[in-house]
Amino acid sequence: QVQLVESGGGLVQAGGSLRLSCQASGRTFSNAVGWHRQAPGKQRELVAVISVGGSTNYADSAKGRFTISRDNAGNTVYLQMNNLKPEDTAVYYCNERRGASIYAHESNYWGQGTQVTVSS
Image (cartoon, rainbow, N blue to C red; front, side, top):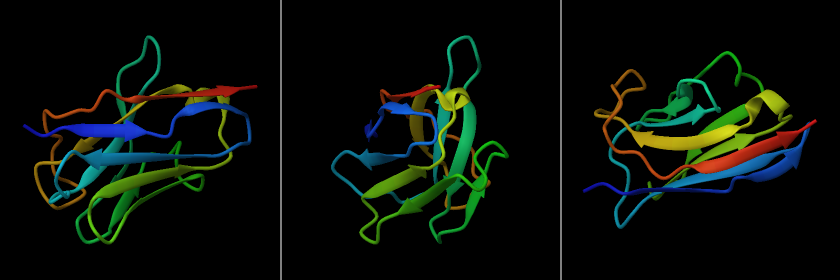
């Protein structure tokens, strides 16, 4: 069974930065990977996704501030978040897609998430 582990969340002031990491336990990622977030009382939403080949796609709220990347070894996917805003406060999750493309559907495998809190 796929196990995903997110880390790197925390409390930061508005305008600050955080880098989130997502690792697949005991193996490398073989498909596209997406970062999602869920704020209290809201549905989970896609933030960014990266394909196996390195193509990326971002939610409008993330464009220009967030960068998704993956390391060469294929072990870790990152989400660099700059100029954070209070509305970015949420639990952030990663999800390995069912295929290599940024358009591949989500899988059923989610990590426990990492909390990001941005104070004003």
